[in-house]
Every structure is written in C-alpha cells, then in structure tokens.
Image (cartoon, rainbow, N blue to C red; front, top):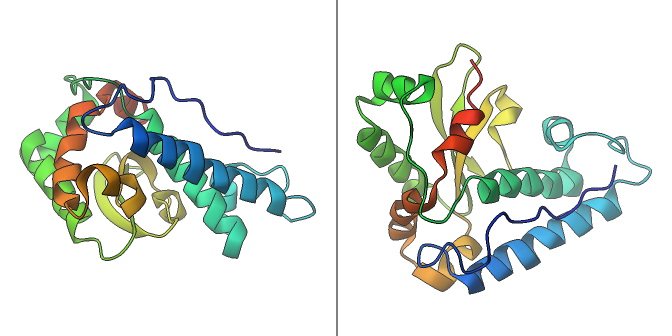
Length: 193
C-alpha cells in the first residue's frame, strides 16, 4: 500500500489567524509530504508492506515507525480543524468530559497544561479507553495513543514547526488559540463507546 498526502478540507489561509497560511504550507505541504514520501520509500520489501498506519505504528521501529507515526498523527491533527471551529455538542463525549474534569473549560485547561509542559517535541492527546473513559496523554516524537490500546480523539501538535512562525516560543498561546478552530463534530465522531 502506498500512502498519499491528505488533502486539506479548507484553504491554506482559512485557519488564520490561529494557524497562518505560511505555517500550513510548510507544516502540511513540506513536513507531512516528506513523511509520506519517506515512508513510501521504506515500505517496499519490508514486513509492513500493505499494513495500515495503525498497524505499522503498533509494531514497527526506526524510520518506518517514525514516518508512519508522523503521518497518522498529522492526519488526525489536520482533519480536526475547521475555519471558525464547531462547538462541542451535548452528547456522550461532552458528558464524559464533564464527568471527569467537571467542565469543558477545566478539561481544556488540563489539556493545555499537558501540551505546554511536554519537554521537547511531540503531541498532546485526548483519547478514549475501551470503557469510554478519557485520557489526556503526552506522547514524544511520533508516538500515538493507539500503541497503548487507546482511541485517539483530539491532538495538538507541539513540535515547533507547528507553531513557531505564528507564535515563536509562545507554545501556551498557540495551544489556547487552537480551540478556536477545533471541529468538535469530527472529534465526537471518533468517540465510539
């Protein structure tokens, strides 16, 4: 199976001022494209030829793992946004967030704190366990919660290339701003309990 660069469902400037067109051009058009191209070069003749990204991430190591993980993570990241955002509707996900954190606002604070405190480069995730409970986790490098048997729902990329052109070293400001473009209907669709 050959992997392809996902198409964005919005124009490059559509997420401004939260994510600038220049950042999106580099992040999606160059960084993610490089991961796709690299993985496609590494797969032929490997044990992972024909495997899904999730299978590769759970079983591979080295370059195959790193490139597959970054593709999976970025695909989830880029598909969860919409210009202007879309609110979290009343439903099972919102009810579980409120049950565990007391309110959506308290969840957001905890999520931002996890992203701001992650040392180095990586990702902050909201994931679901098989029993429907929710987990906020920090994952370094190309790691993804699927490796722990969790279902990824929402992720914020805290690699510097995701925010440096727009926010320089103000990672916390970037994390706070991202809530303005989250499409919660996409996140909710990933929550299968």
